Amino acid sequence: ERVIKFSEPIEPYFPKIGHVPLPPYIHETLSDAERYQTVFARESGSAAAPTAGLHFTPQLLDEIQVMGVKIAYVTLHVGLDTFAPVTEDSPEEHKIHSEWCQLPQETADAINETKRNGGRIIAVGTTSVRTLESAAIENRKSKIGNGDYWLLVAPITGPTSLFILPGYQFKIVDAMITNFHLPKSTLIMLVSAFAGREKILETYQAAIQEGYRFYSFGDAMFIV
Image (tube, rainbow, N blue to C red):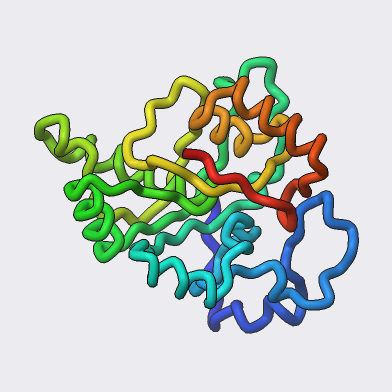
């Protein structure tokens, strides 16, 4: 590991010497980079958009809140390895990349209150799922309590290497919104862990037959 220190901030140079990285299956240059950006993104650092969030507009967020849905935010800096396929014969042997994430106190409080009141936690995208479950796991490691207490989360900031495969027991996420993912990817394994492998295979086959669009600019599914 090597640490490079610069005499001045280098972020202003990024737009001059590079561009927004796009998934390998997008071969055309985006005429408007904002198309590959969510309306609630704030922090720089992610190498890819959390594509489930691309379906949301400011108007839709307002309408959801009018319905009584509370919205809380997390941050996860997606790495370029998110597009890398799992090539090992056994997925358990795949070394998943780590990504920096943050779940702030405000979000932890909102989640804890929702769970205590019998509400559901709906994650928008696999990035949110990974962040939420990482926070739940870290809270379990640091606290001792009864069964209900285990469901609560605490704020976290730092890297996560959580690899969610079929058989994983979800601790905080009750439902998720997610796009249709690449085969042999860690993302499709995550949704298979949540919904069941056979159910996901059936869903993808139905999506193909119905002409649904896949990947970053494609359609989404709501898994409950």
